[in-house]
Length: 94
Image (cartoon, rainbow, N blue to C red; front, side):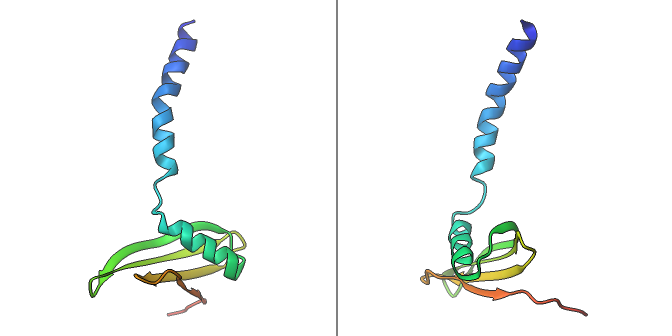
């Protein structure tokens, strides 16, 4: 009985943490993921270099994404634009 009550208590403690973890990405990443799916048939797998900033008083959003098929894309948007500029990442050598 003690084990059951401990497991129940642990479940109650972990539930709020799980809910917080599910909403940790900025909402604009959902917009970028939707646009990538529509335009590039890319299912976002991993987000890299997520940046939010400001340029001349306007908000900027940038991120690199790895698709489930291994391709990489850069997406950038400056408000008030609604659409992201998307470019394929090419292999670079130094």
